[in-house]
Image (cartoon, rainbow, N blue to C red):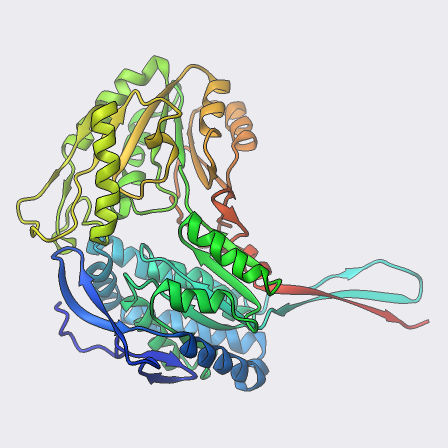
Length: 486
């Protein structure tokens, strides 16, 4: 499939109030294929004026057809949307693979996950219940869950389809009207999915999409006085700015800001079962995953064995064009490649390389490729063990006992996901309770997967929860009604 494939949307336009239109200033942003470094299309460079128009369109939808829909009707729209995603899954996967650089097989999985999000939230839309509360005699008290109103969604470039699904799907299920700002590095699949919403019967203005730069569109959206909730996935620095802007309007914010997630491997684990996940959970999407298992903590008694086996896997890994079926594709941009390359250079100077993959000869010279690297015997306080690299770089750290493992695992500013590998049931429960993070996987690792599983972090990984029913609660506000009836 080539980029000249007939599409059902115009990537150079915004979606505002059900109409596809050019950006207010007529500006454009080039779209680069990270596998080749070539410009393949352009998207609209939205402005603060476009954000204003999108917010007004969302308000009109809430006052009109969308706001009048029952929860059951909203759910049916999402279910139809899910079916349309399934029907167009191959084109959606191609767009995301081409735009982001991830292998096509991974992009197909993302399209499947997107359909599942819409399916899940479509089925859940009419199942969010209030409560009755025992109170004074002659009084009945009940609670209602209502939409916030206009919600802003600023999503990143690494998983556009999945993060759109878990954010927009939950917000619409609760009856909010949304304004979406995709990352300027990867907007194609998000625009395509938004266009399918029209086919699914989503009323005009319930979903608006304004592409553009973060410093303009993202800043205007997070600071808009008539936006009632902001959802953001991205870097800590940008998250701080968005939260500060929203705070001026006293608006709730959901932040998912990344991680430095550990795998903790004990000497009683089923190592052969763990090994593929130990590596795969780091190199998926070329390591550009907030929940990437970038630290592997291994008990001293099996450390050398695990190091040798992981090194052998790394030495066989190959990076190449997204369409080629390689273990990993390129990084999303030259900027991201430069960041990751600096970390690897620091590691080469200060640490020991245990294993290293290669870049395939077929990879175009202008593509943004980085060979995956495994560093061993890394001090727990080293920069490569503390800072989110967002690339195919993994570090190994030995530990002595359970207490030492917990100390190291909890010893970063982040707290998103952790993996624990042990057959000891009591230890499994102790670790699950003592690890500072939002998700703990024992003898498996979701790496952000699981539509039904609440997802979010602690510390600099952010706050609030996406996915599952918790996301529905986050995209609603609770109202208490007290009725005196004698």
